[in-house]
Length: 352
Image (tube, rainbow, N blue to C red; front, side, top):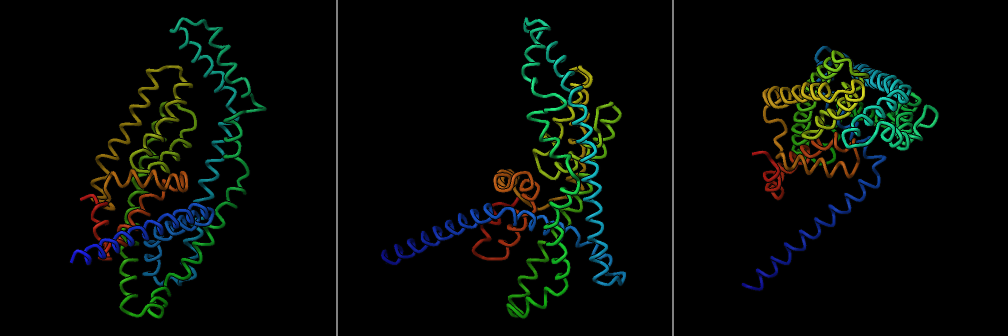
């Protein structure tokens, strides 16, 4: 009996070790081939998000090829508009860098007076720090901003893989069930289709509602900053819209840049605090009151799991990984709920 228990224990250890090796290998492969998996994941996310409009068009009898053409045109048009807005605002920010540098030097010098340093000493310190940041040689921030707002055709070129993946996914969407039946048989194919349908529905609802909520936060932020006279309100509103997809820390990251710009613009800590208070209030009201009421339980993920997923996918794929972290984790959770060996893990990472 003891020998049997020992054999079972060894088999369990070997199985766990095998799974750990598989996880490590998959992680290495996904991180190494990030140039391929990032656009593929973004395409999948857009694919799920477009499920509702595609179904809406199908109910009106719109042919499949026309549905794909209309949806892809809307996606490309949205990318074009967002890229154009970002480019215009970033280039304007680069053009005003000398003025921002001068304002920063003056504000910092006045602050240094409280520490017993003269205005001249403060200016010398700031001039030394920003000495290389002039209109012709903006380092280190200048090249970054100029690269971010560079050729718009480069921006479009970076989306080619996403659009290609998306077109093929949409084209294969309707015939997928038949191929699954042929490949796996009716019973196994139905289970795969059931899992896919649950993932699709959960991600579609999450993305749809999250997009509306993020759009509301972005618009309110842009209007508030415009009323205060903070430069580039449209850029900060767009940044808030994008970062609001990152749970917990996205709102904090989105608040910092406009508050710093407001401090440089007005030279008043009091007014900067007021701007900060208004932005934080927008995030608190929408994030803690409206969002839970609209989204309900959402994707049913533990807050701690969401935090770990942000760290992991941020390490894997950077900022894009943080944007994709929650939908990817939710997809894994739904898939694990359908298989007996992994149901325990799915329950552990759920919010309940």
